Length: 164
Image (tube, rainbow, N blue to C red; front, top):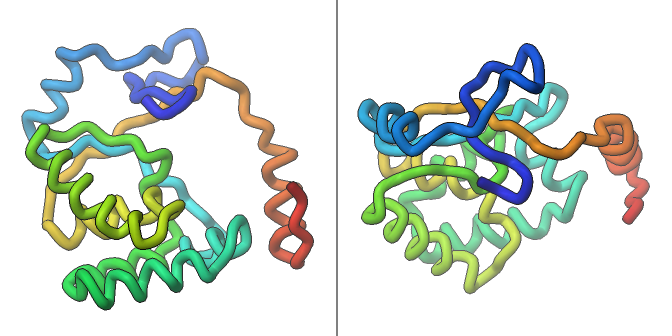
């Protein structure tokens, strides 16, 4: 889970039909892959990099790239590719073995101790570089989304107006 989000059974035709996956369902899903991820977020009109830059600060990602270049150069190719995509796995949601979780955290926190706040953008980079197989699952959000407010804020940021 991530705040109010949970992996779900994917039956989202009616909100009442969707439910949180059980442990047995997670085990069944993991039998065919290394990691379970939420379905990717699609940024139809911009890249992952530009969406982050408009929502936060481009310097965050630029600094992260420099840290990777210095400490983990094997990850640069995946980082650059991930930043240019219009889709990415968000919410910091995943299910994986203890061993993979330990490896993910060791790598991630080594980067974040240098510079935090970008963990959500680094999961795809880590998975791609290590060649892990994954499966994407639907996410059930238990709170309503304020899409009009989010969309309005996004448009304002695109034109250079930052509202907090």
